[in-house]
Image: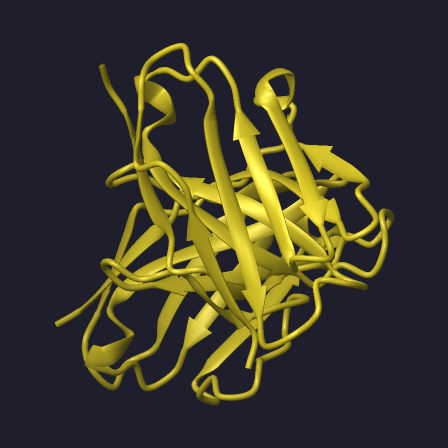
Length: 123
Length: 106
C-alpha cells in the first residue's frame, strides 16, 4: 500500500520560502507523476503543479513564478518550494500521486494522498 | 484560463438520489474526476475518467459527462455520503478543480 507523508515547517514568515518534502513509502517514485495540491482553510482545492520522476515539471500558471519542484529518487521523495509567501499561501498542502500516463494525457487523477500539512504564513 | 462551476450545496434525503453537477465550456470533451472530502481528511477519488469507479467505492456512485456538464450521481444516498465533493479536469496540461459542493443528507 503506497503511503505519502508531507514534512516541513508549519510556520513560515511573510516574504520567506515555504519548503515541503513528500516521502513515498510502499512503492517506488519511479514511473509516476507526483503533484502538490493545497487547500486554504475552509476553501476549495488548488493544484500547484506536478513533477515526473525524471524531474520534468508543470506548474499552475498562477503560481509558476514562485514555485519550484524537485525529486530525489534515491530517497523516494519529492519536494515543493514556494517563494515570497504571503498570508494567502496559508493552506493545507497535500502531496499526491498522479496517474497521468504522459505529458499529453489529460485523463489523470489522484489515487494516493498524504494526510496534508497545515502551513501558516505569519510573522 | 479554464473554469468549472459547481453548486455550493445540494441537499438530499437518505435513500434518495443526489446529483452534483460540474459545468464548463465543452466539458464533455475532457475527462472529469470526482473527489469526496470529509472534514479533516484528504480527498478520495470516487469517479475517474468520467464514469469509472475505483475499487472499494460503492456502486451507488456513478458519473457521466456530456456537452458542458459532468454529473456525479449518488443513488440511494446514505448519511455517510455527507461530504464535500470536488470535480477535477485537465485543461492544456493543467489541472482545474471546481469550487466544491457540500452534500447534506437529511
